[in-house]
Each structure stands twice: as C-alpha cells, then as structure tokens.
Length: 224
Image (cartoon, rainbow, N blue to C red):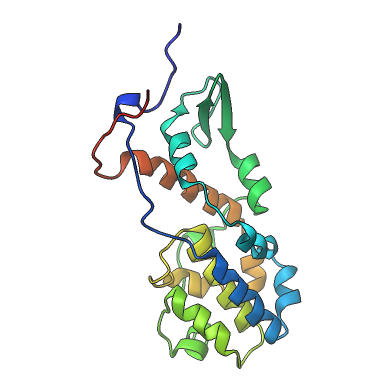
C-alpha cells in the first residue's frame, strides 16, 4: 500500500486547544445597533451582508478543523495557493473557489496605492468616535450600542472594522483594531470595491499552515 503523502508526519500530529474565541453572537448587537440608526439596509447591501447570519452557527468544529490540518497532503496537480486534505480515500480541496463560496468576498489585483501604505485621515471616524485613539473590538461594539453618530455611515464603518479584524482576521476581542484598517475604511466606496477575498484568503492559508509549524507544541501521536 502506497504511503499517504502527508505534509506533516503522523508522528508529529498533536492535540490542541482553543485559546482565542470569536464572538459571533455579538453580531446580533451589531445588527441591532445598525437597525437603531437606520443603517441596517445599507449594511445588508454591502460586502459583508451575509455575515449577519453567523450567530446562527451554535457550534464551531475546532477539533475537526485541527484534524483536517494534520491531514494536509501534497496533492498532484495542486498549487501553493490551495490546501488539500486526505479524508478516507478522498482528497478534498480548500482553495479560492471554496473560500469565495463561503465568504462571498471578491478576488482581484490589490491596488498599488494600498500596498504602499496609508495616511491618517483628519476628523475621521477615529476622531469622531474615539477621540483619535485606536479602539479595541470590545469598544467598537460599545460605541455601536451608544448610537448618536455625527455621520450616519460611521455605524457602517465601525461594523466593517469589527468584521474585518475580529471575524475575518481573527484578532482577539480585547485587542485593538489595526490602524491601517481604521484609515482604509474611511472611503467606503473604495473599501467595498477592494478585492478583500485576495487579502483575506492569503492570510487565512498562511495562518492555517502556521498552526502546524509556527508554534511550540508537545507532540502527542494520535494518528492511530
């Protein structure tokens, strides 16, 4: 019987536990806040519209995801931008197509003006809502609860920041939002046209693979 071409030897598979939790249920608070200021319809027409359905997912299969990551294989005909996993006698793929079907985010070439950096926006959403300070995701939700925005689309911008940073990039709830994201979201038209799928997919694959290689762990063979 031919040896299965696992990327990681079964002897190096390990048990893991979840240390960071996404607060998908908090999206209900976000929905209520958007509705309260009359911006829910605007959000539902935007790039993250179907993410409001995430609170319906009561269970996340973290253990299942880990087992799949351990079973990544070098698939004949696959490329470096996708991942393949051996399940039983079948190889299954996680690539751009699957990512797009799940998230609905578009792919494309990232504009060079975005690659080359950002400039702070004076009197932007940070100044209006947080006195110029970069907020945590917890603070963003509290500010959405408060309402009373100087500009109606500030609620949209804060909601986009929460989804981009906490839900899609997986940054912890108590951490601050990336400053570049706060600046990027100022122009909603440019933000919604940006190929977020290209960026988020690349980050997702990178960190999924880093899970197996980028941390210290006590190896425990559970392959049998």
